[in-house]
Amino acid sequence: MANPDLELQQAVIAALAGDAALMEVVHGVYDSTKASSDGAPWGDQQGYVSLGPEDESEDHHDCFTIEEITVQIDCWSKKPGRVHAKQILRAVRNVLSGAELPLPSFGNVLTELELQRIVPDPEEGVTHGILQFTFEIQVH
Image (cartoon, rainbow, N blue to C red; front, side, top):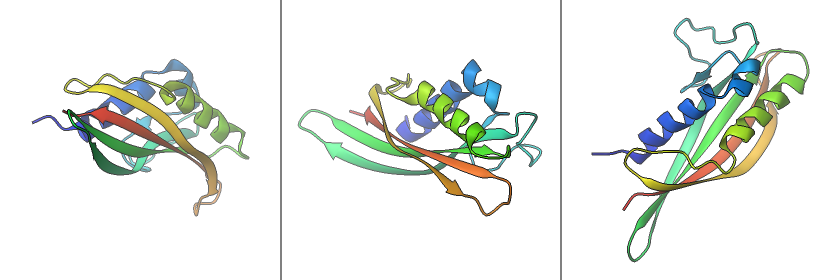
């Protein structure tokens, strides 16, 4: 059985990892916070992107159902100041804002940016940028 949140996760990661401008300013894109195969995702660019918390809800209409999935995209930088974090945030926005991501089993994916912010990180020397996107997916 097809799973809209799993297909969305794969599409978001593929879109971000496949964008040359984003990959110029980050080391990689991961599906969990601060996780990679070697435990150190910073790389030469001293930044990366990961998927954070997500929420789901359904909206039933007469003939179809819309699943609304809000995904937090976390942007991490170890470069001093906020400039690098803001470059990562903008690159992610350029990829996902208004994007109609292809999902193999579902149609009509609409994307809307809900929030952008930079917050203090408990790890010294790390700047944490947050984007929240809502994706509306027609499931039936």
